[in-house]
Image (cartoon, rainbow, N blue to C red; front, side, top):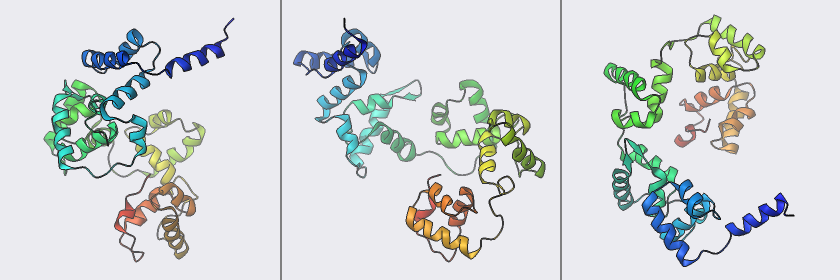
Length: 292
């Protein structure tokens, strides 16, 4: 009798079988026919192959290397030809306001790029998103579009020509129904300090006690505010703290979490804000772009 463990070994061996010329040709034709419906292709035509194996083989057939090999190699600066090719690919794979990045990646036209880097390059550089102050008209548009499309930030981004991340932040922080703007009151800080421990950091429950405040701001104040975390100092930094911060930056680079651990009397947010100031420490400019 074959055990489940032996079944697993047999299945693994089948996945590792060499590809025949017929299988390769079939895979190419099926991808042209069904596009990125890998689940259908795997279940109906390649039961002995995983979806990842199919994607990897198709990528290797088109580029001469595997996806894993590609990801192991460091990406270089984008060329003008790549930017033009990416813009054409986006137009081709834009369906109902949504871009299929996996399909663009699997075309093999960008052997030096991952799907996430394609997406970042397009939205961050090529799409030329609008930045700067928001107008009242844009605020109203965001409210209406969220009511119509839900919180589909990428889709809304194509309409407003603003980065999806900024649209999400704008809505959650300022435009969502019941959002409360402005400085926190002493009462709100008191509720947060008292209830966070009692509710075992159940943020949805805590949010109900502080109506109108976005969840991300509640968490941010809980972990960073000296009014909540009494272990953190407030006000002017002393010489010891400045020295510790300077040494931590030299040692840990851009890792804000480790930097804040090296300065236990200050929160991660306080360290971040201190490093942004133009002080006599004269940090390199890029050091202010830290990883939270």
